[in-house]
Image (cartoon, rainbow over all chains, first blue to last red; front, side):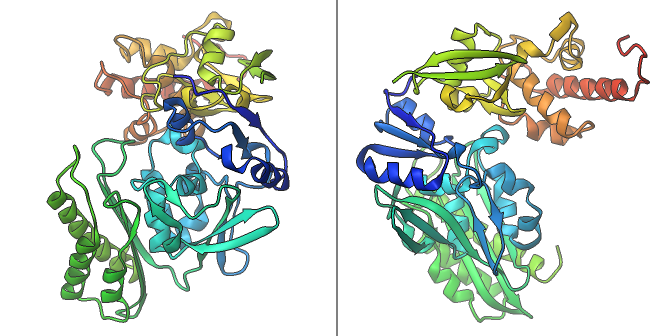
Length: 290
Length: 168
């Protein structure tokens, strides 16, 4: 399969990227890892007139923690996340999700920011970002704005990104102490999209939940922040009853559709079970038990 | 809009005029005539088109040829450089790591990259490493054995004193 013809630009600075994007906003696409975009081009689901390749711009593949905020550049790849000692030590939800993305070869090229901008409701990073209360820095020529992950996704493959904007940075508030986390993903085989995925992050204060974050994958038109489950948990002492109630709320907030991977009831039940398991695992971790 | 690119393929510098939409796998197979790289699913699932880009395995059906400009490509043809089989190829032969052979070039290059990174991988590490390469014949048992064979042989070669014969 060959994509429809397009022009190709590989600028060497971010300013050039933004200028090109501004000039050609309506018919340009930004190419990061390409592991979703190139298949789309080949299937001709997308046929932009111009591809702007970020890969020749130095310094975009970064992960820094300069001021209590984790900052991730637009070319930070899944593989780098998988290998990052910073993520393993302090952002365990990302460390746990990274090796579950696609397959190892795709992870060599695919990027976290690209995956988020692509906004596939079956994408894993969206849920992780929702659970971690991430913010996205959107840049265009002369304008920078910051949008919460919870306000970013608008539907299947839809985001608030304007045609002349790019996702320039992911920002994640640093956890005061190492939180507990789990990413549970049901897939038919390695490399498949999730049938259901649940991202859980728990920051604890003794036995009390200081902040709970839960994101749901592949059970709605977009990644869902399970806010009702989070509310059940926040400020509570974690007991089996509270965990059960939170899991029930997450399942209720899911909006799955029946397809070849399962029925609505089945998927909703997987959300419930995964939320329960994820919370228990995260709690053990946050207490220092593993 | 045709662009001129220069890549180093298996150690040799080569130039080509390409349309931006040309996929890397087509550059390798059709322009450079290195047909050891296979096109399988053409949808980035199967891994038959795996080649190394600056030493890292990529699915060459999901990379544009223009993206490889000024970079290094390694295809399966590089493994037997000098006419002697690479230990990985030897492993696949000794342990019957292939039946139809279609996935083999991709399997071997992924294994090559794995062994650069981890000279003594466990069975589980091998299985995870090749999980982006699909084989429909072997059930993977013999592929895993082949990689273990290659790992042992390569460690043996690395340990051999300088000047000693490394091939039995």
